[in-house]
Image 1 (cartoon, rainbow, N blue to C red):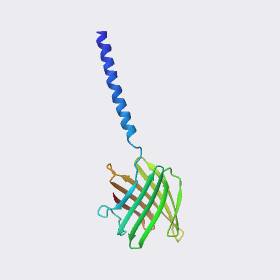
Image 2 (spheres, rainbow, N blue to C red):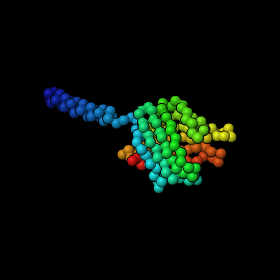
Image 3 (cartoon, rainbow, N blue to C red):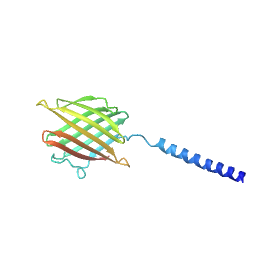
Image 4 (cartoon, one colour):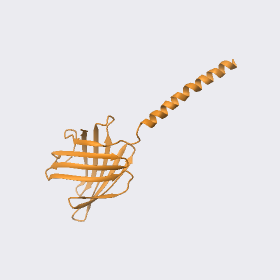
Length: 166
């Protein structure tokens, strides 16, 4: 009887070790944060800009080498063509970019699987415009959603931009 009990315990232990090793391998294989690298084109049908007209064309080219992200945005809209380049780090350290002669301060950080970017623009009247943009990547990595909330003189506004990977 003792021999049978000892044998069952050994079998039980030998079965649990491979399961634990497999679980560890799966955890190691999954990246801790998504990688947004690629060329992304605005999907106008899935996007919602609220009371702002949708851009005619919007392309984001992202080079993401954690913790650095280089974002080049090319847009065409009612105000004409605009190309901007931002360089973020995902550690929350503030950076600055000059956009159409206006200094823009920004800081990016991770909130789980979501990248949160806080952007502050100085306006000509001395006031500032604060935007919090949150990026998420679909499970298959083919769609990126950016939800921006901004406080304007007319109240809070939300823009949802959905991008398809090219």
